[in-house]
Image 1: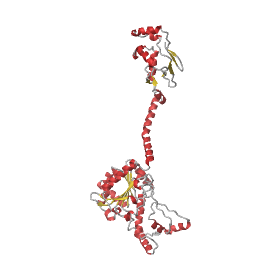
Image 2: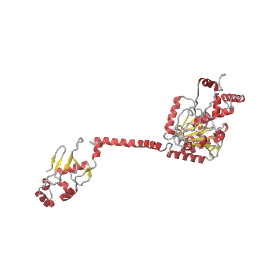
Image 3: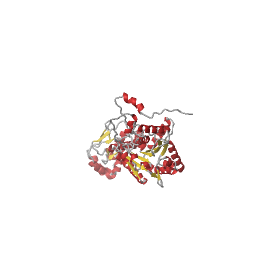
Image 4: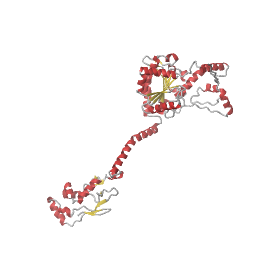
Length: 464
């Protein structure tokens, strides 16, 4: 059975009509570079071209490391066809992950050139137990091949939940749904691992035909790029698209791992990366130093995140609200319990800072009410307890006049205030004094002394 396919090798055929019908065209994207070849492909001369800087401070908010080897034996991480078939390559890749995952907070994205390589690597890690050791740091998720939108959304939801708490890893492929159009801001993607270079399938019929077409146009001077150059550009456009998952706004930050020996000390390869990434790329001969540097990178940014004092204050306020909320709930419950005991929040405040009638100290409402009850019973036991009449008189002379206290009225709806005009002993006090105080009592009996009066706001009580 044969299949007939029609493929357009020249995008200018479709874009030409748009260029004729419009006055001007603006194309904006993060993956248009290199601009010269892109303009040639569309068949339109773009006189104004701009390759802008990134909104972040790449020196402080971005770490990019190129690692060319891994494992105890220093196995090459070059992800060509022959090398990726070996178990040594897969084990070396797993060693890099085990050494780095624990130093990265939040979520991690890992991009493979194909579903086949991703499946083979994960299968090897399952056989050796590396995947279990990786999951001690972060939960692992995998982009499904095919499947519907609901299945992908379910995986992304679970991944984001784990990334926000214990951390998570999402294995995906270049040119897939996750590498394009999905937002992984902040903790959702604190690091992106690039495994290899995502060149298109070499023997794919479309790729073969396109390369031949570009070579023919180059010979006739209709194009500025050859088939090999076009092939390379397709790889780095897909790669740059995946790199953009790491930084999503001006206060975001993250790390990028380029896991392939072809990134190491290769200006021709680095120059094909996005402009905002190129200056930050550093080649590491020692993986130990790379792990140390990336750990220090995240420690510094966790202490002083981008955005300065305002962002720190906002995070501090948010954390304080989370801490205070349970405490406020407990206080609310306590107030509710106090209401059940005939006390509310305002009454609790009234329980303190009340002057004592005996010592001038500040006492509670209950103690003040108890003292008044003792007065109403004649005061004898109260004076015995406080050191007798003489001690009472000494305390009286030291007190200021007109000391307000709270009555023994326990009605929650009102509080009556009593005022002392003068504190003198009464007739009942004289009759009930002790023998040792009889001499003083006789003098007081013959003296024309006034009686104590207590004025109530609602009623008047005379002590006899």
